[in-house]
Image (cartoon, rainbow, N blue to C red; front, top):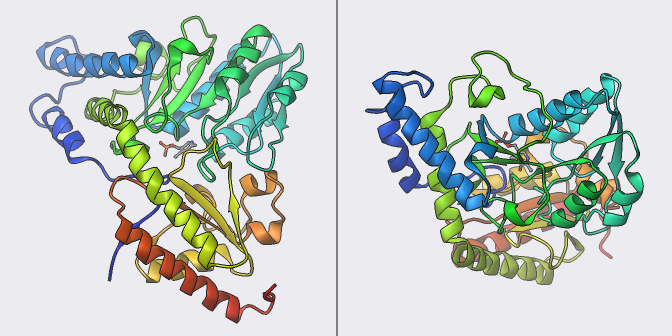
Amino acid sequence: MEKIYIDHNSTTPVDPRVIEAMLPYMSETWGNASSLHLFGRAARLGLEDSRDKIASYLNCRPDEVYFTSGGTESDNLAIKGVAFALREKGRHVITSSIEHQAVLESCEFLQREGFEVTYLPVDEYGSVRPDDLKSAIRSDTVLVSVMYVNNEVGTIQQIDELASICEKRGVVFHTDAVQAVGRIPVDLSNSRVSLLSASAHKIYGPKGVGLMFIRTGTPILPWQTGGHHESGLRSGTVNVPGAVGYAKAMEIAISDMDEIQSRVGVLAESFRMRIQESVPDTKFNGHQTQRVKSTVNFCFKGAEGEALILNLDMKGIAASSGSACTSGSTEPSHVLLAMGVPPEIAQSSVRFSFGRSNTTDHVDYAVLAVREVVERLRSMSPFYAKT
Ligand SMILES: *Cc1c(COP(=O)(O)O)cnc(C)c1O
């Protein structure tokens, strides 16, 4: 049976060039980067070289790049760390209704700690309207967090505009850019973003390593305390092989971005068009243009999302319903609900996220498989009446 992976927004395989770059930092150069001796210094050289490279790719200063264990930790640190640093100034935080759970649950934590949180709505394409942000900011607003690219539908937000609004009002702006860095150009010298989270394993790097960009002067308290690593902001012996691998993964993603994104985008677009032509009663979710094209999200009215995923899996196709982090739950996607999709339609959603390894043969096979699975599930459904 064919095995076709169309779930690259959940994770990606590690690029062999990344593994090759990491290996020496697990064998010869295994020191603790905070040790003063020879072993430590050698590891530190690799760590700081990776930080320098990442800073040059993102166009920021190396001392503004902090390594973490991934996107989830960076989101937690940004939201809790800034809110607590500014809690005497104000206790109002703004985010959007389509964020990743790492952001949403950090905000819920703040609510339990006495903060008030405003959840900005999105339009039917999943875009936050800058005017909604303008009118939501109050004198006690201390932090705004809006994701760069949505993981379920791929919609790209107007991050630079949102960040500028916040800067004018003196409010710290954070963005979860896990789905953006390495997929679309992100230039921090041209933007007023105060904090940005990213993760290696979404761009062919290793799991368990991520970063946080913190613009110089941004108020933030450490969330994890201990040995004062990463300038005291993130204690814990730094994952040097992970940092080295992340720098390599980002280098590859950025140098090949145009070529890969256009090739993968063409595959994904052809899949999208052929599904729309060959499967009736489908609803495409997401923005037509302001979208990372490799993400294709559909609702197949009358077929249940989880059942679709399991049946596609039996045909060797790996895709997701909603976000992988919330799968197992039968709740319809909060992202689609926020975009105004009725709950019974949102239940039938599948996210296909294409990547480097996909081919036109994969698209041919996947179109046939999706058509067959959707038809079969619909024929068994007491609720589906062909329109
Ligand atoms: C995957 C993802 C995360 C979590 O990153 P991890 O490194 O897996 O913790 C956060 N936000 C978004 C948008 C993601 O896609």
